[in-house]
Length: 355
Image (cartoon, rainbow, N blue to C red; front, side):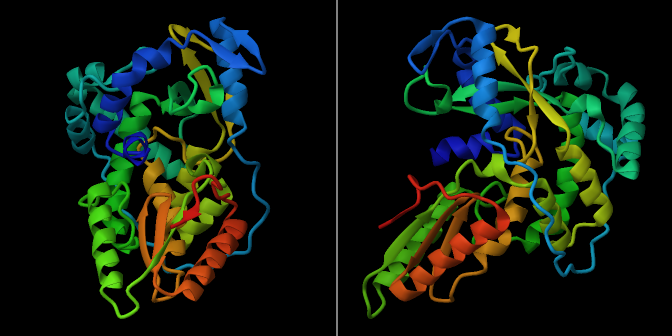
């Protein structure tokens, strides 16, 4: 599952779409669901069942939260010149991108120079006004099977196919954000960052295991922490507080607030796209370019909260805590529980365990 999650949440659209396209035919052609013993075979009814299932993953708006002490914000420079926009377009894979209005990356690449000026103006106005275009806030969701029965809608994850122009805009913004803020993220975090990966996380864990087992106590305990629908559950208002506290400029935070708010998703089953939709009231939206990095910011402070004798390795929301001090590990568990209560994320009880 970690392997699958790495692709699903990857900020690299080439890897994401290669993975999704390998499974997309079965995802687009879900022929049957069974809900409460009732067989559902009509595409419209199947889509409506997924709308009901996926909409339950989101949380209501969080209550007001006291302001956090914020460092002096960084005035992130985002190059939106026609030349920069054109260069980003030309680097896109022609096979990527989907939208209900038939715009795709192949079309964009073949008229990059012609459209770079108007896109530069649109992107600049969006950032200046701190308003993300509403027309780009509708996503087409493909239900992707995870495990278990393929007729149970709860065994699918929602993968959002966002508008190609929105993805292009995100790529430009996230490059600047990563340039300025990756260095501030915890060194214990190995998820979705350049020059960090799942294999490196495993190597780091093995090194720490060896260190603890070579110590005089010669034993250790490991706690595996996982969150329940973490990427879908992040409250937007609390995310904005985390971003401000991270040093991101308030104007850019306001733009991200607009980017995340008032979004809707429709379901695609075969060639059918649902007329009904469901609102996205929380989360960082699986399938977007910026979503993984925003989640890393949200969870970052937790990784530096543990006692010094507790080692930490994280891959996005999958966290391992290990130590030869059981008292410190228990304290760490208490810290996680308190953090979850404060920041409105729930633990996945079936995936959180001790070894």
